[in-house]
Length: 423
Image (tube, rainbow, N blue to C red; front, side):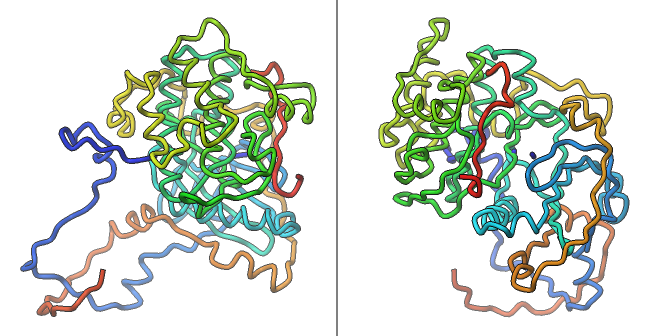
């Protein structure tokens, strides 16, 4: 189901750095007159929109998982009426059966609210009914990078370099917020209509992992899991850079670096086997993969305090202008061929051919279970801004008071995914 960055500014040329994207600060002179507006129910309530399932028309099934489905939907009333979104529906009854699954569901919702980045999926709304949780996300019509990789077989190095660069920026951003992703794989990387990537599916993320912190949960997709997760020896953000190395190998060879006919043998290969690299890879590509796939996490590229800055400085990325990349000034190697905003041609027909039905919600949870999902409701600031557009008022000018203000595998369906509840 439906998917990252250290700021490395060069002050000599701010226009070509990530500062373009981040600099939202405004300095206000001390003598500016400020407007004070009297708060009334009219001006407060205009900034909220209470939505529910009936605000969205189901169009197509995009994916299905253990806890629910993802639909393509159209908003039929309220702000942004007529726009197309992806709607992720999760069943509360299945989630509350396991405390770790409950924690991961809440973490996904909170992370999607917290992070804002060009290469991470946007959350527009979150709401709930008696038995279900709903996440309304931007619709990424380019589909999974997995599908594109399946079509191509392998990527040329310049193509892989582009995608890996955008992924590095997204992961670096998560890390700068104390978040480790832990489920990087082609199925969780989606393309928008222009061909830029977006990370999706934050159900296995872990928050509050800063320098020196570790966590021990066994989770992820086996072929992309770092050795320290498999041995349960404690892991940190370096696991994402192992997964990046496995993904890079997959992009350039057609399969992850360590695979076998069953789960146990795959784990044994990851822990014990030597990495074999095809001769056709360039010297820089081989060197980067080797440094990302160091079994000892302290020796792995990206494991230092500099995090993604060390990876961005590797010769494999010497042609990348990181400022241009984060601001989407680099042309993607592939642009999805789409007929309309509703086009689902880039998604698996196993799902898109199904009749879109959000099954009846007849579940009743106990009071303590319901409290688990308190505070789940969310409306994105961008939605609130759209609600304000048609609103005007005459503010009353008052004297301003001074206050003291304190500061490739042939059959990828055989890949093993392990969630906390099943391991």
